[in-house]
Image (cartoon, rainbow, N blue to C red; front, top):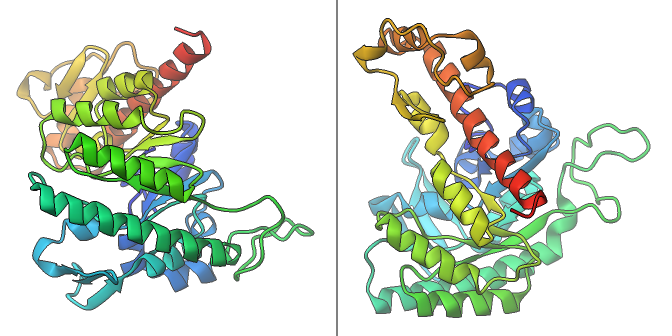
Length: 348
């Protein structure tokens, strides 16, 4: 899932994302809650309508973003009080509020509100955190079960038009709420978190709390041990990971869904993924290179532009550099995922 934090994959319009065959985008509850606000999006008929995207959407609950605020937040049993990074205004997210906002946004898949622990964290801190996350997960599910009919993105069955206000969904059309497994880098706490989250009964499960500064080998160990605990006949979502190589490895291990800011963030810094390895296009050696970025790539960037031109755009700080770099990296990631699906179909 490419990351479209603010209902936008930076620099790439929706028609290009469709051309790239993006099936599902990720948006972020924290950022959309602050700007433009859930009421604005609800009034527009939901996030799909607001951003003109007819394909699937997933929204993260905002727990990871609140975690990253550090000194601007205070966690309690009720939820998290924090100050907006935009204007310093006091805000509050509880499990119920996170559900209310995500129901109002109307994404197809929404996530339970969880607490993400820092790395490293000691045993008492991790224990307290998973207990809090489990209590919050139960509250999320209770609120969601009572209010899921309020999503704004149902089309009126008779007209096929978007409904501008909340309406009851047609039978069989609804959001899906996924639970999140936490537990830091402790395999036993991960096991307990997984078992108790599964008992709450969600249609899909995510592995959260990774990519917070731990060594990549440790990430892989925790992912593999946790995956084995999750139902194989339900979606298993690994949050915030990974490199193209990790995508293939984790898919082989049984991960169904992944998201990561790496392809878009790296693109904005001139780091490009190719079949010949990573290319830092800012380097002077590409200044007179007439070849394509990746001779094996069929994306619109590699088919049209030279390395020399891409290097010039980046050196000149042209906005087009970020756009073209992002389009290529997204294509590379999505092509990697298509290969994975081909391998699965071929039982390889």
